[in-house]
Length: 419
Image 1 (cartoon, rainbow, N blue to C red):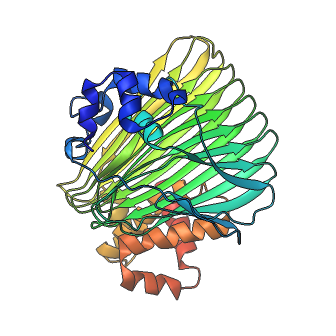
Image 2: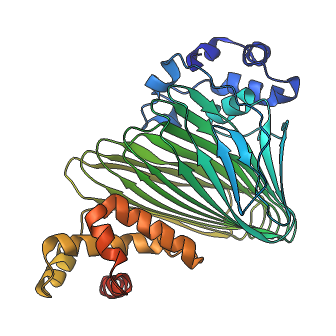
C-alpha cells in the first residue's frame, strides 16, 4: 500500500479502500481534507516523509491472541496484546473505537485510526502504577495499532512506556488517545532507544485533560535512526499539562517532537520543556505550538527549548510558537541552541578533570533537569542507565555501575556551577 495513493480519493472511497467501519467517517473526512503529508506539509517540513509515503508497504495483520494476565506489565507485540497484566483496577479490552479527535492537525493520526480495525483500550479505575512494553519483531512491514488510555475521575495513575525489538526496515505507525477525566492525574513516562538498524516510528497521539485534571508527559528518546513523536493536547478548565522532553540523536539520524497544546478552558496551565543533544550529523526537531483560545482566560502557558550541538555537522530545528486570542494570561516561549559552555569546561579542567570527562559531566547535568521530572527513583535510575549506555558506551557504563555515589557528586557540583 502506498499512502500517497489516498490523496486522490474522497472520504467514502477512503473508507472502502482501507476497509474501515462507517463509524470512522470523521477520520476519513479529515484525511481527505488534510491529505497525506509530503515535503511541503508544514508539520513535516523538517522531516523527510517522502520515502515513507511513497513506499509500497506490506501491511501486518494484527492477530488476536489469548494474552497472559500476570505481573505489573502490559505487553504488546506488533500491536497484539500478549500480556494484559494483573493490575488492580486496570482493565484491558480489544474493541472498536470511534471517538476520534475531529480537529487533530496530523493526517497520519487519521490514517492510523482508519487502518486499525480495533483499539487496545486500557481503563484505570483505581490508583495504579504499571508499565506498557512495546515489542516490534516483524521486518519490512507496516505495523499499525492504536492504544486508548482512560484515567477515570479522581484516579491517579503512573504509566511507564518502554520499547524492545528491531523490526528492521519496518514502519511503526501508532499512538495514544488519552482521556484524563475530572480531578484525575496521569504521569506518562516514555523511554525509547532506537538503534540505526531498527524500524522507523511515527507516533501520533491525542491527549484530553478534563476539568481540574493533571497530565505530566516525560519523554526520553535516544535515537540513532529516524523517527517522530506527534501529539495534540486539549486542556479544559483548571487543567494542567506538563511536558518534558529529552532528546539525544547521533549518527545521521533525524528525530523530533511535533506538538500542539490547546487551552480551551479558564485557568488552565501548561509548561513544555525540551532539551536536545545532537552529535555528528544528527538533526533534531522541536516544532511546538501553544494555542490559547478566547475561552481560556487566566491561562498560564510556558514553553522552552534548549539544544547542545556536540559536532559542527549537527543541526537543530527549534520552533516554539504561541498563538494567543486573549489578553488575560501569562505566557512565554524561548529557544537556545549552542555548544557546551567553554567557561564551564575550563573550570572543570582547572580542577584536574580531563576534557572528555568534563564534557560528559556537563552533558549529564544538562540532561538531569528532564530526568528529574520522574519522581519514581527506580524508573529515573533506569532512564539514567539507558542514557549513560547510549552516550557513554559500555566501558563507562560498567564504571558507573561500580561507582558509589559518583553520579550524585557530578550532578550536584555541575548543577550548582551552572546556576
